[in-house]
Length: 155
Image (cartoon, rainbow, N blue to C red; front, side):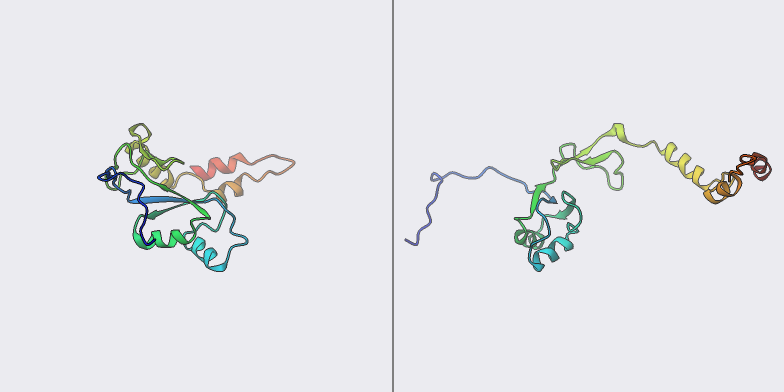
């Protein structure tokens, strides 16, 4: 009576499996109607907002113990890297699919020249900011906008 029935054949082993480092968790049940300790765990993982929001957590025993307590409220998906990991600090052209695949695409990378041009555009003092445009482009209903002020202010 104290024995455990084994469903395997003698000598049968599990195939080798390498666990993933990260997990994608997604809330699939409502927060309302659950006890306060489950709501507290959902808030801890920042899953107390909209339904179907995701959170990325480490696959470690401490986190897995917390996820076990709310397993009926969430969906856990291991994050795989079929294209390999990107280089450290270079995460341009990467995205996470809804199936937990962390994809890397060289076609989506942003050219460093474009990033530099954007930074120069934002730092340029010659362009008008929002307050200046509001000041000079106020519409006088009888005369229309005063474009002469823009020309004088710009240079």
